[in-house]
Image (cartoon, rainbow, N blue to C red; front, side, top):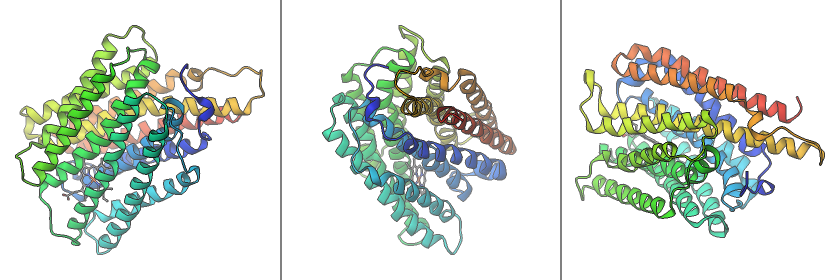
Length: 411
Ligand code: HEM
């Protein structure tokens, strides 16, 4: 892979720690859904739904995105991260923070203290990771538009955690209750700003490199980032009641991102890495369906907020992540193998360390879980089955991750 600075990569065990934890949260979120089924899908305000949302948003996506950044910044964005010693304790604090946050959604007496601990731990991790990434990007030498995009996404993380902390304080009685538009702003900043913002910036490099598409022009990415900032600013103005901004506004940049992925794939001069392409294509369709669900009447009395949440957080974003995670896992295994093998001795190519069949298996399970999740919106008892298949998806991903790592270590 030309243009990749593998020599600047951190020890593979560091990003792998985050990726393995992400996969473990994926299994746990499936089990949670399998256990509580209909309760998770009954109302967006139910404690069970909020636990599920944050297992996916922070446990699965958060860990995977932070772990991938540890690898991506030095290797593909020419921006080595400072302070190498902080990431192992940060990983522990981040996951402990999630562990405190989830029970804090439940109506228990201990919720107030857990809320405080979660906000402090997650807030410290968000500020620390944003500061480290910003410093790396400022000193870095990679493409400017890529560094701007990553910077924007990473700035959205502490903003999301700050808003989440305020909402949690209101929920647990530390502060006055907030209106629903503050929750929408928090969800917009987290999902559109941090998650899709990072995917768009990183995708501008990885789609051409790993999927064989053309490189999107930098002006287009900049225009998209401006639109994203404008939508988030309108969301803030709406939450403060300066403007009657629709919460669906943040879905505009999300829909444009999804359209961009599909157009780039459609007009690809080469087709590389079919399972990864399929994962991104499926994710883009789910994100477009989410935008449509916010605008169009839905059948069977399905509530738009539920449909958007399921399509974005339960289906679309995990699909991109599943593809990328297995891709990053093969890079990590390859780097480990390279470091362990004496010079001059041949090693398998990156693509051979995670076989396409394993990627198709995990993706097939995700498609099945997605179908069941969609059906469960209309008939909630199906949520139990959707959860079981979701847990199986991430178990398959965990087995693939473990097999590639064992192979790299000569096991
Ligand atoms: C990247 C990180 C995060 C993302 C993507 C995220 C996403 C979301 C989403 C989508 C919702 C809306 C749920 C719904 O409408 O069904 C939500 C609600 C909520 N989030 Fe987060 N969240 C994140 C981090 C946090 C953190 C760190 C905290 C607390 C410290 C938090 C606290 C809350 C609370 C309390 C609610 C419910 C608000 C209410 O009761 O009105 N979130 N979050």
